[in-house]
Image (cartoon, rainbow, N blue to C red; front, side):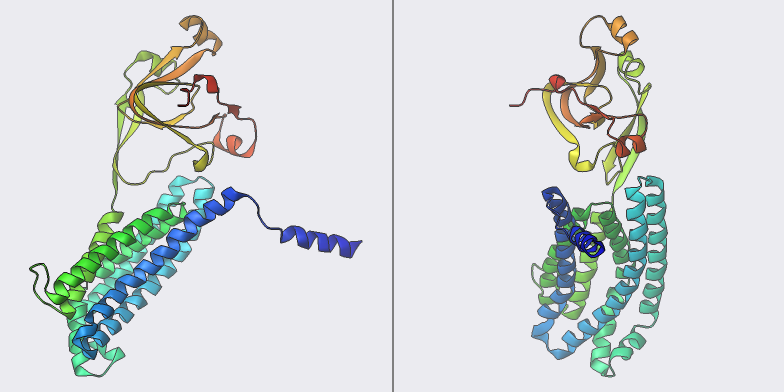
Length: 356
């Protein structure tokens, strides 16, 4: 009996997951990461491929210089690997402040490391190239490459940290988009400056270095995001008093990524887009909404006084053109309660706009 129970336990342990949502979620993270790594390798390979027409000296110089950059990337990935584990754990525990602290720590460490590499590259490029080869012509061309790409360490180190930690919170698509932008910029810049196209000077290996610098700069700019916060007064007394949210809203303005607290997973949230329309929902189902929408609290039945006293019959009303991100269930007393129990109240579908 004991052996049979052990066999049954092993079968249960290795049972395949049949939930399609699980595989979809895994693929949504795995595929962008795999494609991003392939594209990053392609950025470095473009220099070698395009410099192939100018002989072995320039190919060897760029390849050896990129070996030095790969050495820096290995150090960065060590920093990122540890911090991303912490960030993922904190994100799963919904400790957003600790996620921010982890990101800041990783960024400071990466910038410190990048600064050391940048100073060494600027001051001792010939000595660095001499580690890989003793051929004078290869060293000379490699020095040209390293001089131009000195600041790539700082730029690329920052974007590596940003992209990796975004993966830790389930936003792998951002890193893929950034890498695609970098690849396209590098392809065009290399073609222009290596061969002297589009009116640009023919720079050969220096053109490849300039293309890499421009590509990594675009990668850095694509990772940049600035989101400003401000307090916005509510437009109506009903939304302030009866809505239970106070007299002010926290508004987010700008471009970037933000963390929102919700009592359901991200893929279960509902996004409703309004075009000169009206949306009525029960309770505090709305997670966030466009600032240009008019938000009021109105009675659904009976009198407004009676609804306020009983706590029933009040609905949140959004009017105008914009979007509302809402939860399918009403929040409970606290987020841990909502996520660890099944006592959340279902949304009343009768107040949602009819499906077209």
